[in-house]
Figure 1: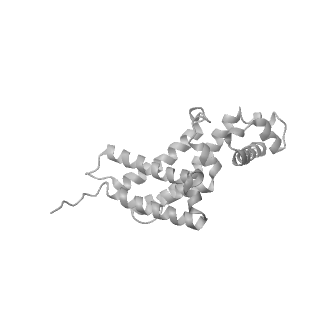
Figure 2: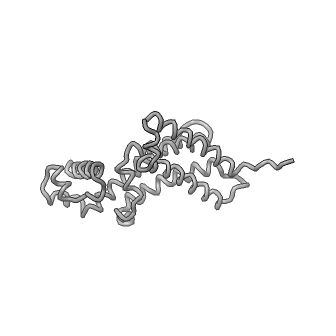
Figure 3: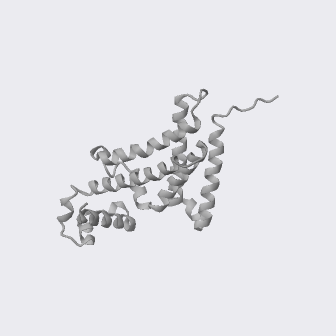
Length: 203
């Protein structure tokens, strides 16, 4: 792969990390990469194309982490729990990329098949894990869809609040944040299990 292409992507990511995606400009990216103002256009039509490439790579890496959880040994509930932790870990380890991955106004993924496919790949892992954990004669496809949405909403919300909300500040330290993540995911796993476990009738 072209060194120039990688230089442009690295400079773009560094700029987003420092100043936010709104500051992204090909002129500044070129300056940081140490190339001419026109050089980035050899590989990218504009800043939206750069964002789309970063999104594609982000979803690819997230997919790999979720798939590793899917291959883990143990019961379906454990694999789904590992995937939830992988999702949060990805967000915390890649904050700049995570912040743009779910911002459709920043990049039209329909114009970037690689990014769209990578996003679908990541979501498909979640769907498979939820089905493995909860599918059964008592659970309709509609209920499975609701559980998938609920699970995704929980892990995404947790990751976002840790990155940009009050949870990260309240935790105060990496160790405290880790304990908070573990308690939250454990509690959610129990709560989600109750959605398909018949509630005993009072005698």
